[in-house]
Length: 267
Image (cartoon, rainbow, N blue to C red; front, side, top):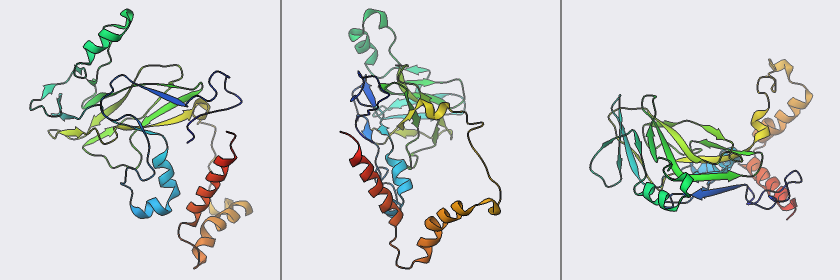
């Protein structure tokens, strides 16, 4: 997506500013990165070359990485954790990033001292752990952030991620993800060079529309009219019937259209 967001509907003081600004309170590890069309090189080559739907989803947003490598171990009742390089497992309740609390209190204004966000926290639900990325974020007015599992990147261990939408134009707090461990007595390791989660921008108006009424479902093949059959023919029938059609031609058309739209945007 473009580096800057601009709109006639935005206040003049924010035009030209980045859509999202990340604040790295813990500045070790990798900074957020633009998500990759190849899903970090993990997409099959055929999908990368010909499936624009997959590559577009993969590249939408930014990767967020753990600030330090760590492991989690769930015994069915309690969760234990270990920093990379440590030989011992510690019972997890709430854990601060190493040396962060002292640094936070030394640099924070007086009223904020004593409130450093925890790096890890065991939640009341069995096997669920909250993991802080070390980041805060602020978005332009009326924009929110969807925090989700990295798109099209296989999981590296026995866990799932919850998804959440944070209204970061008016909520300025730690960006975290909730990890649900799915296997007991097996260490689950989180590496600093693999995305912990993916962040995707959403206009608030998109998800506040009523989903209960704002859709239609039409039953039966006979319900398709001339317009639907014309579009189906262009999308499915014509490419399948033409032996000379170039494989991945639709992906090429999408990329060309996207390029034309981008070039037509005002500077």
